[in-house]
Length: 260
Image 1 (tube, rainbow, N blue to C red):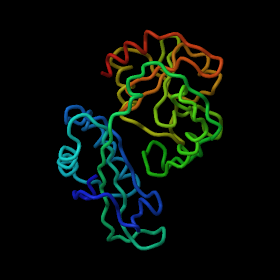
Image 2: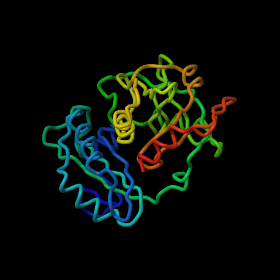
Image 3: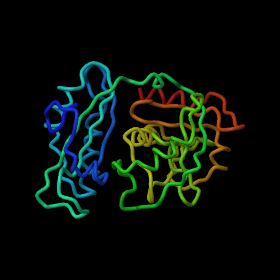
Image 4: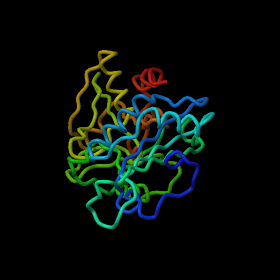
């Protein structure tokens, strides 16, 4: 792990990322030492930093450190916190951001194409100021993921306090129905991921109608195809939620080829 460019296995105990979840992160796939879609990940990381008032590290700095650490095939994670400071919610203006880059093996579940899912009981709260940001406050996702330990279920689907479907615990979600691609509205909560961005681009490139709007469990269960994406798993088509079953879908197959 690199902390501010130095190999280390710890951050300062008073780092605001640890104390308050005051920071953002991105997770990406590295193939043969090449970070996949790095320009996109850096752009989103920078935007997220700016939205919460953190000066983003220079792209050249993160690129050099990422290439130095993440060789071969692996999953890289980049964390930027506001930095170490005194106790209290108001950060000192002189605080310098902390940047952390770590790497892990590519998980076995990445090779899956079709998965079983479930609806989570936990409901996401609304906070428009944080909507879309991949911030470090992920306790809702942790609690939701703790709801099941059945290895046959790969992902849990999160709804908001108004019972609108938002995303998976670690993934972006889409529906495909009657020739139209449907994405959840993330104006109040949820994460804007790079793969979500790419799927939306595919809709334009393939002239597939796209709707970004609110929908609930009933509409999801009636959709012809339901799928999940993130930068590590690629695309997973959901083939079962409870008693509902789906056949392997043609749209998911074509989109998967395009994403790869």
